[in-house]
Image 1 (cartoon, rainbow, N blue to C red):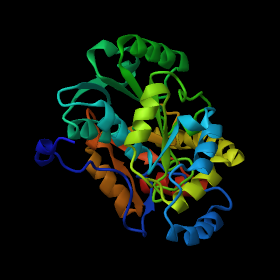
Image 2 (image 1 turned 90 degrees about the horizontal axis):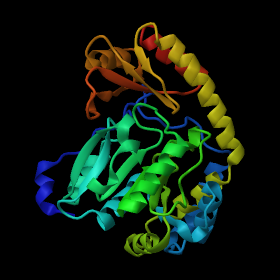
Image 3 (image 1 turned 90 degrees about the vertical axis):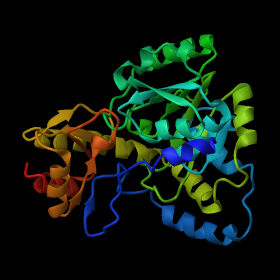
Length: 334
């Protein structure tokens, strides 16, 4: 980390409502978790009095099975962002250029800058066509946050091939890929995939995730990861959730159905960006802050999306269950 940059940066704004009296549509997390999650968490509490086994065999095996790779290619992390910081710390040196999609997850640019790197913003819909030879690292968010755009699998494979030829690493943030019936790039040579249990399993406070990498890069990331970086309860709950394939499929079908319903209701008042993720980006005909305040006054929290690079009059809303989505529609006067 480059300490000289710390005085130039600030915290990145995110969704998540602190007021429990408001229905939270600002964070894109599943409102439910797999059956049995609570009992697994409670059972792991007594074991938390000891250091976790740093090999995390059970968690690695469950994660490997989930994305279709070998267990040794999985690197456990305390959430997707912790994994990505690990990647940046290993790969990005001061002055390195990193291709960053925009608008997209705001932490990418901050994390690059923390290492002394230079974010090179690329339109999110052109990121798969970028010339990797110009960059040390290329980042893709699939599906992209906040637009909900899912990238063509063939296009991603072509980008991965070009990155390998150029000696550039491709980092693919697949935090929302569970909601799309598309293949993961996990296990692809020259690619690091970051996954999170936050979104699909509705566990943002658990802080569990993992990276997938191959070859020498995997070895370097595994050496650099912090010891005991995943808590005992997080590892146990993570292994349990990653085996809940029926839950994942049912969630995907519900989100597809509810997203279509919600987009139809909101389209009378907003321009709705087509999405394949558990959220919708809405363009308003008035300042985003006014829309956020209107929703708040009606008991609902939504995300002011103007904090994303390149957006000005946009808000983002999560897709939840029907009775909750109806409250959002009502709060926005649709």
